[in-house]
Length: 314
Image (cartoon, rainbow, N blue to C red):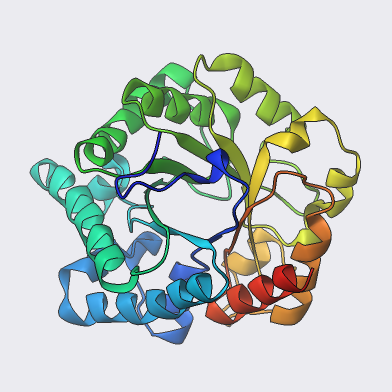
C-alpha cells in the first residue's frame, strides 16, 4: 500500500521519518492555549488557532525536508472520540464533522508546507480513558466497536494510516488494530510506558506486543513507545528478543519526571534537547528497525532538530 500522494509508509521502507513533537504541551505552555481535558481540536475552529498550528508545524516539516526524511503529519484528533466529545459538550451530530475537518486541515497542511517532502497524513486515535491511568479496561470487542467510529471517518476522508497514541492496555490496542484492519488501514500502536518501562497496567512491553500480534489477523504495521523518557525504558530494551524487531518509532518525553509529577507540574520541563537526541541515537543500536523519530510531552521543534542532527551524524 502506498499513501494518497504515492509515497511508501514507514514500515515499507528503511527511510527515516520525523513525527510531530509535544503539540499539546507546546500549545499550553508556549502559546497559552488552555483547553479542557487536554483537547486541542477546538483550535481548528478559530483563525488564531489554525495560525498557531501552522506556526508549530512549519519548522518541523522543514527539519524533515533538510534531512531528507519523511514527515508523519498527525490529525488533531487525540481527544475526538465519542466519550470525550460528549464530555466536552458536543452534540452527537457534530462528531463526524469534528473529525472530518481535522483530516481536511491536515491535507491542507501537507499541500501548504509539504512540497518536496514525503508527508504522511496520520489519523490519530487517543485512549478512551486517561492516557496515563487505565481506570477501566474494555474488552477487545468493545474497543473495536468504540474506536470504529473514528477509524471510519479517517478511512472515508483519505488518511494514509492510523496511529493510536498513549495506549495503556492491550485489549484497547487489539480493538483499534482490528477496527483499522476492517477499513483496510495500516495501524500503529504506541504504548505509554511508566518509569519502570512497563505499561500502566504492569504488563511488559514484550508481552503487550506479543498479545496484540497474536490477537489480530492483520497485525499492526509496527509499534511505538511514547510519553516516557529514555531513562525509563532503555534498560528494558537491553534485554532484547524478537519483539524489539516490531518497534519502529519513538516519541519520548523531554522530562524524566513520572506521569504523576508531570500532571502536577505548573511549569514545563523541556529537558535537554541535545542530551535527548544523543539518547535517541544510542537507542538505535537496540532497535534495529527504528526509523520513526518524534517527541511527546515537553518536546518541540528544537528537540526534533537535535534528534535529526544526531542521527545524521551517525
